[in-house]
Image (cartoon, rainbow over all chains, first blue to last red; front, side):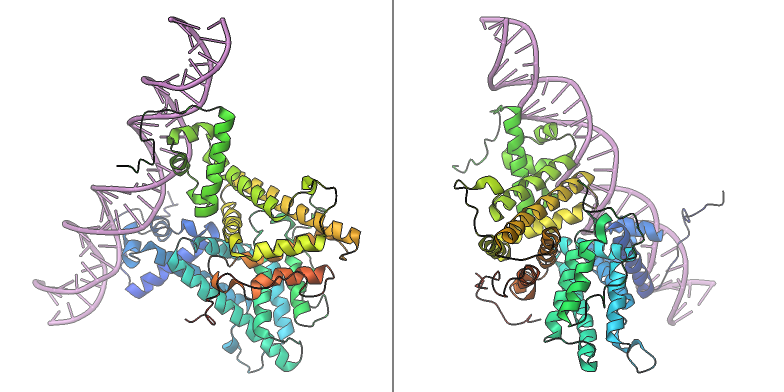
Length: 231
Length: 231
DNA sequence: ACACTTATTGGTCGCACGACCAATTGCTTT
DNA sequence: AAAGCAATTGGTCGTGCGACCAATAAGTGT
């Protein structure tokens, strides 16, 4: 009997509050990202950490707070992977904005981004009922928008792209991405088709780039793409 | 004691199965539209109709089916209000496609459409967990897309608008609308701003119309609009 | 008027959730 | 080594859910 996955009983592992709290949020973020925010429950998270539910309840007297923080933790990490923050380069030289955007659209269009799309969709809906989550979602919306705006502004500065209002352009790009990812749970199969391209195409139009600059090769991992909804 | 809102007890009202079923679906659709699809529960719907929960369970042995049908009923009705189906005109003359589209964007941009935006967001997320709902959502996505495509095709036929591929254009318009409505639960206040316009603007660009043709006057009913998120 | 079908009731069962609390036990301080 | 703090446990309580079922009563046909 080697598969003793859980420490079963007895042995308590006492940790520093701050550390335990981070651990809980990280576990909650993972659950929320992979299974959905409604699965971020005291019991589920406790189970993940092999801890008693009461402990999670101790750190989060209101379960809503845990859900909200889980969302923020997940999106924050994802954003950093998508668009490295301003001060993250050792060499002072910033990367080419167009290249950054191309990488950005390549990532958001790939299957690896699916869970993130689901998370946003999930959070936006759940915000209807959970005020705490709502605030965190609004904050992340702003943050993502700002991060995109930074790239665009850098691009206009270096002249590699042109745009009247970086703020508006960033918001439009974000809206297009959200529109495309809205179909993640219903039509994920024909993702490569129109919606996925729309965001990049819109960005190209919005930023005065030649079509195709941002739309990476559509080498979808699923090469079996059927023609036009075969209903 | 005049407020005898419910018939309290005893009196049974026996109805024909078909009629009762429609009644249940209609009530469920209303609940789903106003309170959310997770509130479409056997008990909640039964309460709405002043009937015992078991009865609803009798007509819908699987609760998922009720949720799915409620969604379809709600969106079907809404679509007909938004874009009257092809054969709905007594006089054979079809309306001017551009006028139809203008009306369409005016309606989707108004506050009356908020609950519908919420419903779609709701359904798209819930489709992650409920296969029955998922199928209905996919069907409605197709239907909405087709209905828009009809208008566009009519427009290209009459020459009032130009477009390479009506099918793709319709899908793009829908994606834009979905992107805009994604923010309904988090940033409904500054709806008038960028997102709402984006859909109409994209449609104008997509259909070769002069900017402003489809974007109706942004006379928001909420005239008390405060300046930029005052956080 | 009667019997028969079935729409409708009233109730139970098991489950998962958040909230709450007293008892326990690991760690730190004295 | 003893005392104290608090992280952690184990358990309870109330709620709302879907599913299920036997009993009831409203119509329908004879």
